[in-house]
Length: 428
Picture 1 (cartoon, helix red, strand yellow):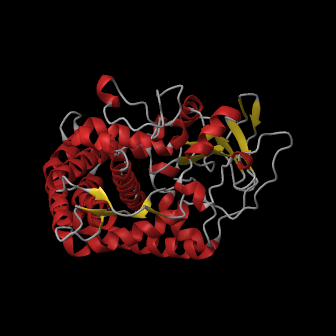
Picture 2: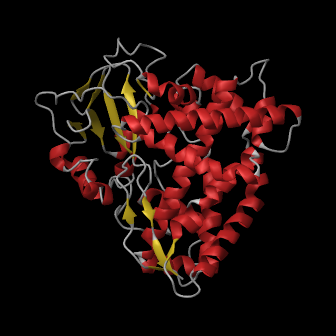
Picture 3: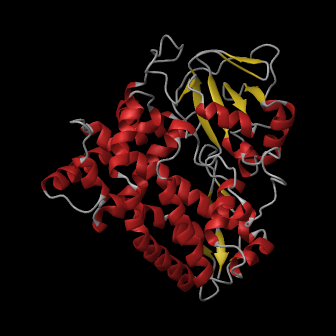
């Protein structure tokens, strides 16, 4: 996800520097979004650090560089811990985005140490490995029910949307179970998440900002009300734990509690939906690899790591340059923005042999070196839960819909920061 959507004018290209646009990096192009990998390959080969006039960012495409910069403290998800908007040459926050920013900047994803360190420590006390393991049986049960629904819906030979039937519902249900959201309220979460996450795309519109702010206010008010109930009557859920968690007298503020829960929903939902959808598209267009899963030759958890690598739904994360950086002879000045192409790094042949090929058994001989969950202090806290969800979902569909086939070409949207089809028609 991006770190700071703005309406700032796009800077002109630095004189003499490579142009990412000329090599096909065009995030506003539907053709590029549908298949960005040829452009990624050209960037890695010809201009591993390239300026994009279209987005006003430095684009970094090689695995080693992306991995290193994700860990480099000279870059940050935010700059407000060391500077002001004016000092960084950026516009002040637009008034209509105030509710959105209040939520986003209260979560750990868009803050830097020492605030990030404190928040992650507190949340980690509540969101433990034991929490994930406690959820595992329920995740398997939910995934199994959705796969049955898919099989039932397609039993007459009709085309079924795998996104709406399987990919979308599971993470909402899992996050709801995790937080203890009542069943009657769960239909509210996905629209809120979609409206907030739309702000993370490049150059969001004014209307997108209004919807994101409205969703932030509504979701925040809902969570605070639910948190008050948990404070009076704690349950066996993460929200109750977050309300109670303390470290040497330190607790989450109300804003931090809301920001944490919103982050868990948004990050957990988008990544899991996208990997499920993109993964099934990859399997259904590579029948030999799908057969290896169906036969049991490759365990599903092993295949999940390759599916996370091969077509990541979050192919780009942004960072702000907090101190001047030199990379491959290119000067990245303080105050500029860097687009770290995780999706390109995942296809880097210097790290992954035959990187464009889907090989579900790639992880049998060792870890698959993907960047999908990030790296460094912002490595995804929910990665273990995402892996549980993905393994349960793919396993359930393989069992209940063993004849699954692709019926339609995927309906790719226009989003690049969150890149996944909005619809994937299948027959069972």
